Image 1: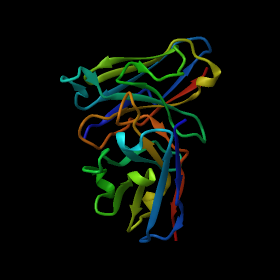
Image 2: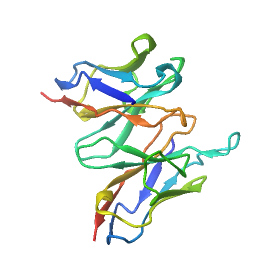
Image 3: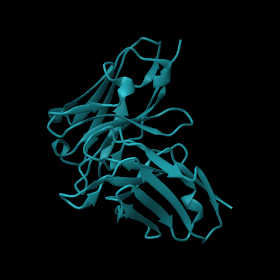
Length: 119
Length: 114
């Protein structure tokens, strides 16, 4: 069974930093894209970042470029999101997602971790 | 960036009736080399993460009831629930995952019981 378990969320002041982690199990981790998607309270889904299966390519939504960094550790079956210079508008549930055998880009979702940016 | 626009924003349908919702992309998400549309549909219930229903625009994910179907190509797509059940009350999102990120989502369509 595929499992994606996020951790690292919490309350942080504006301008602060957080590092989210996502531990994956139940599939061949190095085969698929890994992404982060967020959802602000009461709002829709926003794709944030992804990293290619070999880590050679990383992409970000414009609003987080220069502040967030996605990385992966295939040996630990984990993907990370380093978030710096956090803003109140970054407040959201952050979901880790992975591809699957039928479609390498999308498919599986974790339960999410809440990030609250507030003074 | 590709902009995804869903309609309507909300939909009220009687139990057992058909529910149909639309998703339009600002650019084609069809890839000629593999003849695939890079378009997915998700269902999200309150307090839960989204659940993948449909990928490649029309391929139903394993375990998804066959009352859910996806259609369309290029820039215009449709998700149909053929006979609405009480457990289908949710928000439905489309997402394009075409080659160049960001892999954008539509704003969602809320489905309720009439």
